[in-house]
Image (cartoon, rainbow, N blue to C red; front, side, top):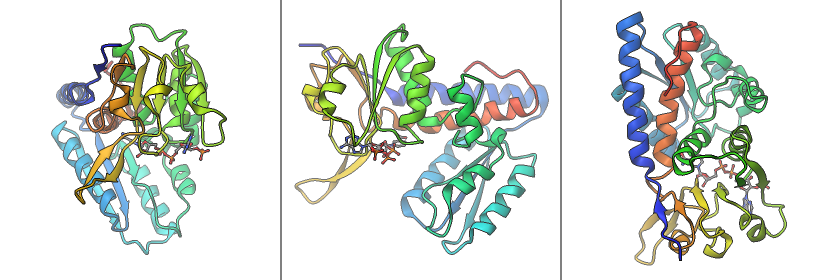
Length: 295
Ligand code: NAP
């Protein structure tokens, strides 16, 4: 029986947000620069509206400038691309975030491709993707970078560790694999076509679950002592007719087996917005050739 430690993403994210705020204050005092993050929302998707609102609030709390552009659900791809071109050219905007998903008439990849790589704080532009995989400085996708920050604290040396990433999306799984490879882990990426997922997962010293499937990862998939990062956020119905959030890992079953695990909520989730603020600050410094803070 292992004594499972809880990885407190909420506390780590609060620390990172405070570090961003301190660095932003110094940037303003020394150079008169206030990094600006612009969120673009197309349509009325309620979840997206909540995300954009909480991102805006966190941006202002960190002392950064927050801008928002809303387009109707009927907006054409050309309209959105024209807006992005304006934001690319706007010197007060350091980070551009287009909230996904987009309405069906808009091709999301064409939109991502249009964002200036230097302002691509989501890290989804092909130039940033290529830089990440080739080990160059880039803007790194926020959720996997948040996972890496939590891992670095949980495990003193990542080099040589056997890491298994469940999920291969462009947003989480693939960049997570690139980051772990960058830390000299031995990385396996598994997905819906992989054979015998439990056996693959059991190899992991570090298990990243990002499959969008509530509690897919069972206790007996976990190697005793492994560090488990649960990226999943799934809303499931409860017996009393209400709902609750669960991760992609059966949290209760992991107790006593995992060496450490992130809870849902309160694990990876809070790190994502904190890393977005960090990226905006880094983008503001890099664009102007200023020394970037090491946060
Ligand atoms: P996604 O785009 O739906 O990708 C899911 C991945 O899991 C795919 O690669 C899919 O494989 C794989 N998969 C699905 N079912 C599987 C199965 N039964 N066995 C093995 N692999 C399976 O999801 P995502 O955007 O990467 O997000 C993953 C989870 O993280 C979601 O729950 C999402 O809500 C959460 N999330 C959280 C944050 C945060 O801030 N905490 C941010 C982003 C996402 P195929 O490629 O073969 O289809």
